[in-house]
Image (spheres, rainbow, N blue to C red):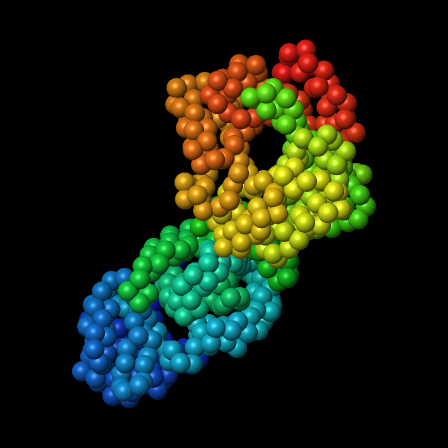
Length: 567
């Protein structure tokens, strides 16, 4: 298939295949505009919203004579501009209309007009259709059934000569970070963005295509049975590029993008339900691969989905079946050479899968919400184990940003301290910088409560992301953990300078520093000379089972007495 051409405006003035909006239904008014607001086509609702005089005159710039204040100037700018824009125009005393403009071909403009007082932010099927004028989810099954029937007819036709017959396709299109836009800029801005995105999507669809809104920020584009895979993918790439261009909403520039999942009716998807499932799997792949891109369905995605689903089920049962356990990696004080404590690390021993790496199950536990139950157990179990060690040894526990969402974390920590009987200063909560962006206000409140309990707070993997001095000063951290990439990497002046800077920064802010990933005596000595407070890594010990910690503590005591802190 060649690059799809918009079913809107002609290549030359002699062609009469302009976008005809006269049949567009719904409460929104639609119009195709020319120079300074000349109407080429409009639907009946436009006259209802803007008045018969505008339609009769055939010129939208007549509104400037009735408009009030700066809105008239904004209107003229939008009529003559070339970018997307949205304005709210007062067409009479107390009567306002929201006008959204988008560029078409041949210097034309697409206009969508709505009454802002009747715009709903709900996401029921009827209101979705109301908001965009598109088909809604109620028509999804009908459209998929029609595609299925067309495919069957094309394949069974005895005279069919098109080798691509039956290759109907759908594109599942999801606006990236739409919830963030709604939460930060308001639902009115979100609604405006949905309309502008709809306008751009209309520009690349043809009369034979079917565009619908199937979710809050999700669209579906159904393509007919004569599509070649390469053409469909080129269309998806075109949509990604088009939506990534800036939007202008009420004078404010807004940047976003879309992730797209592509699926075809073929031997692997012989019905509409499977087709939709394949498109959704491809969409999820596009999201996890970085968003703002299109991804076509491949067979392995279905297998991965089955494996992931099985893993989700197993994770929900693992805690009850006591399949989780903690291992402990020692931490050594560089000033005294003595054992300072242990970091508790979660492990999952699956009866069939064996040891499942944390990098595989922790993200799934976070997405399913199981991390909250698991995290509460980890804190309790780590404190219980620490109660068996000498009173001067600490235990560090990693906490997911999602554990802060329900505001129960301080209560879990307090309960673990009470049940284990250890002093609060022996427990250290480690958080990553993801917490600082996930829900910073809630995190700050709960971290403050933890500090008031006497618990220490460490920032893990410092230096690998977007942590800033403002984060260190705003949040009640007591320790900074230097990421192992600064320790294990090649020794050069720049890396050493960064490590020294982090150590000095921590000291100036009254925070201790601990370096991870120490594997050689040279690394140990270099960090000790730089003033780092503590280290952990394979040089000291690999993570060990809980039952081995007591013997390790005794061994370290003997080595300290013999003057060998790192043996």
